[in-house]
Length: 212
Length: 124
Image 1 (cartoon, rainbow over the protein chains, first blue to last red):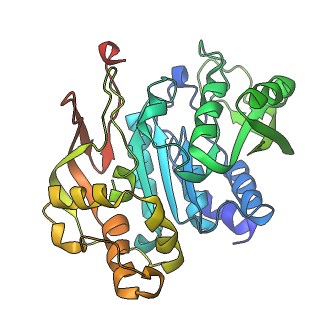
Image 2 (image 1 turned 135 degrees about the horizontal axis):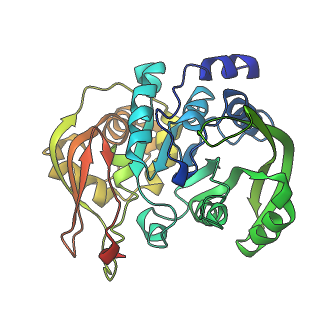
Image 3 (image 1 turned 90 degrees about the horizontal axis):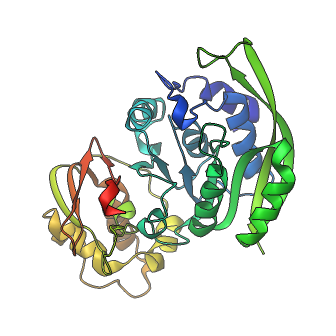
């Protein structure tokens, strides 16, 4: 599927009804999701016919993008029941025979999660993790660590460009090599009441991690 | 939740040493879904799934007869066998029920196809 077509198809994916600030729920824009997953397949062949895990899947935008790019199976994991419920509704966008998606409610920040899902069960991990700005510092690295345990080939993630050096260094500790595929602008529209500006662009790195 | 997912889940309750597999108690199972069959994917999955656990899972939902006891030899060429495996791991969905830790007997609910694996404070 072409990038533009994928982006347009993802416009039908509903976002969080009432985003929870403590969980840092910002929806992944259709543009970002399409760019990430299209590149992951077009440039690296990591989506089509692969088993993919979507960590912090929220309403399922990345998962659905993966299905549209012919993933064999996608597992979406999130802590929030409401988001997962919206994700269930979103599956109606897909034809029944394509909806090879399971969802799981679990807390990715807890160490016990490492034992829950068998290591290396997936080819690829994709995620748009919380950045750690809401009393949850370090959470993006928790996500990255888990991704490194569950994926065999590659992990795709978004991280603030301002944290690049730190991310690359931490990734090494997890046995990962970081390749900054692109620098993107993440437009966070005023999701929450306290946002003073109408919309804000954050510079983010789209990173492909592989195993050393 | 498909049986493909069940096959990779272990109980993560604190102190549990042998939490695999989680037992399935299902009150609603959907066997009607039709997922497009990809033989290469199934061939790729067969060595990676725990066959005994898949058999157990089927037995727990009363569908033990859907698969033979053993994986057939040369399954790559046996389309009928591959289709059976495809049906069991990709087309059966546990909609409502529970996953039960075999050691602690802690029950994790499944609603609308989504297992809730959140642990309480005292279980971590």
